Amino acid sequence: TNQPGLEIKIFGDEPEKLTGSSLLRRFFGRLQRTNLRRFSQDFWSLWAGRWLDGLLPARGFKNDGRTVVLTVAHGDSGLAAQRFAKKYGLPLVVFFHDWWPDIPEVHAPFRRRLERDFRRLYREATVALCVCKGMQTNLGEHPGVTVLYPIPKKMADNMTVASPKRDGTALFRIYYFGNLSEYGPMLAEALKALSGHKNLRLEVRGANPKWPVDFREAMRSEGRWKDLAPRNELDSWLAEADMFLISMVFEAHSRRRMETSFPSKLIEFTKFGRPLVIWGPEYCSAVTWAQK
Image (cartoon, rainbow, N blue to C red; front, side):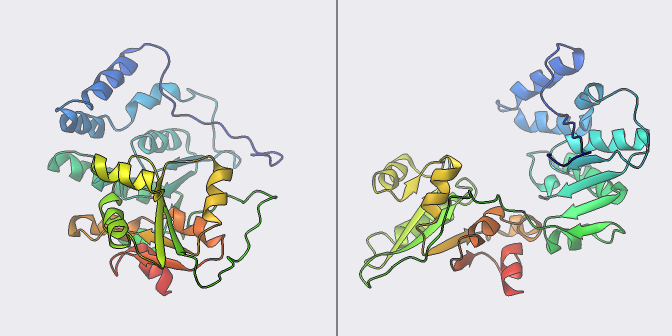
């Protein structure tokens, strides 16, 4: 953003003015917190991001070789960006980080619609940036496709990472940081398996683990579960690790998501120069990346 001659304008925030569109968005947003949430998600798939159309600039854009539309194929705002780029004849660059059609809780006909829109967004993108090779393979051929793995945040200039000094008696520390909702049950089993181990200690960090309350409190009191932390504190904690754990789920219904998403924390961990343990099915993106 500090590059001379580069101007970035960001759209997609929640609408502040009360309009018919914003009121409809709020209504269905509240509906998502009820037992009718699946019908609310069905509606979002039909609306296809049109709540954002009226918040985008109405005129003044042309394909002058200096303006590009950038979006992410997650949620419905990418479809608004697609319409905007087509309207003004602008190049469209799209990040494909997750297989979005498999994520929302919608009924089967609406999931097929999400899949159709997702693949059409890929076909119509000028440049498609896929988070891993599995994403590109599942989406198919494209003249402007590139695999772009996650880019880690630069470490603070005053941050140094030294090799751990071991005297043969200290615990070997394995750290995990990331999603404790989807991967919570797996990590709970690992924490139980290593409980009381005289040589190995697993610590995990993340928000709202999907665990029973008593187990959550036990892990907190033992210091084996830590909540989110500011970046400097997080990096200091990660620098203590002897090894990092990356997990991806094994359930068959999640196979495509595991093939097409990529754990961004894996790239963050590599900055520390420690071994990586990847716990996932043979077809997941992290395993195929590591094997290569």
